[in-house]
Length: 248
Image (cartoon, rainbow, N blue to C red; front, side, top):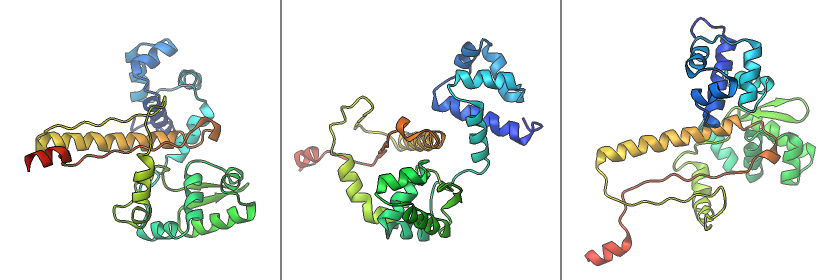
C-alpha cells in the first residue's frame, strides 16, 4: 500500500468507505464480482486494481468510477468536523447564513439553495462571499461552492450555536412518536460499572463518526435521493424521578 501511487491509495480508501456505508463485507463484495474473499482482500491490501476490475467493483457497490475518483479527490484533505468560535459566532448571528452553510455542506448547489431559502442568485452569491471570508467554503463556477467542513458538524458545547439553538433543537426533535419506517428510538436504563460506561462512550463516539462518514459519502447525491436526518446520542448518570420519590 505504501508503494502504491497516491491516487490509487485514495481510490482504495474511497472504495472502503463506500463498502462501510453500504454494509458490504469483503466476502459479500467477492460474491458480487465472482472472486473469493481472500482475493478481494489481496486487491485492497496491495492496491492491485485494473480499470476493468475497478469498474466491476463500482457496479457491485452501485456507484461509478467517476463518483469514486471524485470522492478520492475530495478526501485528499479531510473535512473539518468542528468550527472555530469566530466561525460559529458569525453563523449564530445570521440564521440565513447558517442555513446557506448547512445546505452547501450538504452538497446543494446555488439554484437549490435559492429555492430552499426563497432568495435570488445575487443574495446566494453574497452569502457565499461571507462564508468564503470566514474560511468556510470554496467558491466554484456556476454558483456552486464546496464546504471545507463536514455536513455533520460537531458544534461546541456551550458554543454560540449550542447556546442559541440547543434547547429548541432538543424540544423539537423529541416531539415525535418515532414510528416511521426510518425512525428509531431506543431507551435503556440499568446499572453499569465505570469501565462499562467507558466502553459505551467509545461505541457512541464510533457511531457518531460513522454518521459523519455516511454524510460525507452522500454529500453529492441528488437532493431527491436524500433526506435530512437527525441522530441524538446521549448517556449520563440518571435515576427515574419515580424511584427517587419512593426512596424519599
